[in-house]
Length: 100
Image 1 (spheres, rainbow, N blue to C red):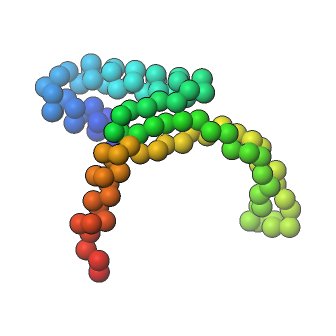
Image 2: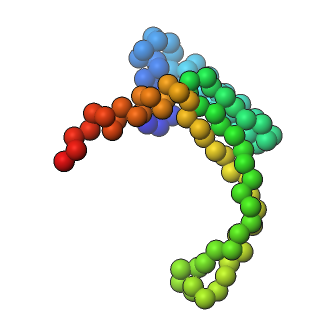
């Protein structure tokens, strides 16, 4: 699903103007991004939690030159932990799948 798909789906379900919905969706994404960029987490109950974690510097390998080590610097990354409702609903995918 793309942002456009989400806007169209919400417009169809709510009867609201697509332009207004697109503005709200973009503002929501901008605000989530701004909070994460400031190092703060964002929690949506029953959906999930976005947080910022620091990934330590480490040594990697270039597959084309495996004898040479490559230093991968420390970086901040976004982590997502699914909420209870999301876990339950996504977990049903396995329960309903055909085990062939």
